[in-house]
Structures are given as C-alpha cells and as structure tokens.
Image 1 (tube, helix red, strand yellow):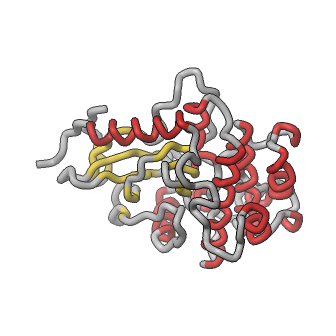
Image 2 (tube, rainbow, N blue to C red):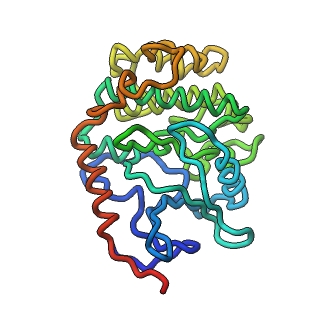
Length: 292
C-alpha cells in the first residue's frame, strides 16, 4: 500500500474504491475520486475526494463547501477544503467503511433484508434532516453509501449539481449512475427532495438485488411496495420521507433507534464486517512517505 502520491497536504494511502474482488461484476460509477490519505505529521487519516477528470472543479468545490453545514448522524460533511485556485479536493474524517458496491462484491451478492431495511431507515432519516435544512442531497446512489460497523455514511453530496448545471441534460454526465438518476434531473431539472426519494429507492433496490432497476419479484416481499413507489417516474407519486420512516421505524416519533432500527451488533453480514476490519488494519499499518 506504500505510495508517495500527494493531494493537497495529504499523502494518499489507498483508493477507497479499490479492493473489489476480481470476479465481481461491473461496479456502478462513482461521481468523484476517493482516497484514504494521511496528514503530513502522520497523526490524522482522512477520506479525501477530488473531482473526476472531466468534471467542473468549481461546481465540485461549491458542493463541498455547502456540505460542511450538513446535519445528521449518518452524513459525511467536508471538514477541510482546498484553497482557491489550486487543485480541487476536500477532506472528511476517516471512518473504516466499504462503498456499497464493494460490500456487495465482498458479500458475494445482495444484502440480507434486515440489513437493507436498517439501511433504508438510516438513509431516509438522514435525507429528512437535509430536507429540513432546505437542501436536496442530489447525489444518492450506490457508490455514495459507505457501510461502517456502526451504520452507513452518506457522501457524494451534490454530485448531480456538480456534474452539470440545471437546464443541461445529464444523461452520460461523468460519474452519474443512470439507474439512480431521477428522470426529471436527467433531463436537466433542478434537484428537489422527491428526486432524493427516487435515488433512495434505486439504491435500496441495488442493495437488495445487485442492480438499480430489478423486476418487482426480485425484491424481498417486505420492500417491494416501498421501492416501487420510490421509483415512480412521476415525482408526485413518490412517497414522502415521513411515510417511508413510518413504514420502517418501530416508533417514528423518536429519533433513529440504533438497536431497534437494526444498527446494533450484527446489522452487517460477517464478511463485510471482516472486510471493514481488514481495511482499518491495513490503513493503520500502511507505510507512507510523509513530509519531514
């Protein structure tokens, strides 16, 4: 894992999206380049993101700047941004975690229904908090979801807005997952909260089946109706996040219940837990050349 690559003041340890088994199927696109990196003094490890080669660095940095103010237990806001005029990047505290596509590959297939339901509730509550801030995430997709031992983390904030300005068709834009892109946003429409609901449905479908547009019968019975409603092409036919939370939460009047909601011990399959632990150990053991 040794490397001398630098991004800003950080030394790259490894790519976050590397390590997928060779036999795994093709992975969904990731809307940004993501690395695990270390500070010059070696004391801090971060998740570091940079724009794709064909992306607009200005829009990328504008979304990163907004993400600093995101609230919620399961979001990954930027805590450090590149200085204006230089290479675009932003950093977040490192959390040992696997991107959802990597997790499915490690698991050898889709996640158990219990895990998907817990993931659905955590993401729905996170999006509800963002919408309460008058923000739409505009980046929910399988690659945006990281699975950690204590629960998911949602990144890639603003990927749709960063990929292309409103009014410009976004089909084929760098890094966007067509299966998770709400039709109205693909056509160039402004990202809105109900677009996040569509993307949530596609992401849950991926977690449960391995792809974002499954046949209804491929989904677990307990998720079929919910996912199908989220994926309605007409935004007006999609459920509100409060309705989703009410269906999934044991008590929707309370904040997300860690144990009752399924994010206690054992919420992730053992293979994924082992892979997260291996990543953490490998990062800690990595020898990198740091600035004196």
